[in-house]
Image (cartoon, rainbow, N blue to C red; front, side, top):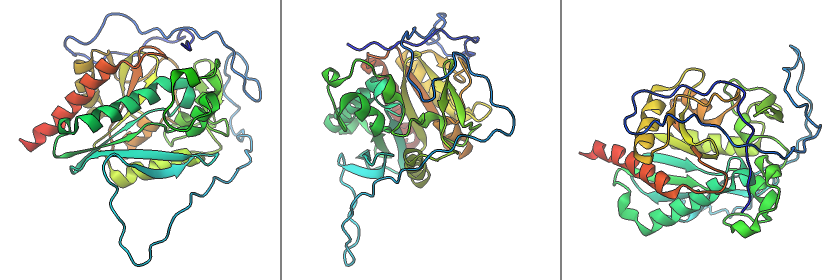
Length: 329
């Protein structure tokens, strides 16, 4: 089993939402320690100093993304995508397709996203595939007024970097070092590339990482943005690992509806619920940007980098579905 641990936080832990009955643990979330020194170009300093005011981000040579082939049908209307079959919503920097899978056909869309940090957070991808298997086998658990979209791999370049696979994979496919899988093919952290307090030089723990040359500079982020704005989901849920909690989105203040949905998920799953992620500064976060578009979002941080926390996440997903089902009654 691959272990990837995170360095202890250097700031105060986030404020827990109160009250959340029978959910909030008194235990302070302490990320585990990752002793590997990541290889970045250029090699980062141990601590991040903000760049001088007015300093331009380093120029990045754009490599054109691969164009996915399409079959024109000038005389036939488009055919709706059948349930459970993949829809290509975009392509990665290195040209790999990004898939969305649909379950149900109700008017309220909700979206679950795994693997925005690719192969580094590989357990979020396997969790997304397990959720797909569950809703394929149990379609009756989806209320009639809900459609679920699952994007299991939001960063296919990062997954390929550590598995040499596209899509589903086995744990035995993982490389010993999964750190390179955190980024896309241009070494950009895709969860620092969104237009909420964006910075070209972003932070992951105490390491500087690239937020891209500008917001939405990466094709993966643009594909997801287009998908979200087209669907206008009632909720976008991102799976991450590993800080053990449910985190509400907001830019800059916590979004009220995101907080409500985080509490519903946390109360059912047993995860601690937090108003925001505050272990270190996060800029250009996808969920936070969604809140500026009127789309609530929550991030589920799994307990470790290996476990899927299936029972906890199933309970949370079913609680959210029950919440939307009440609107039918």
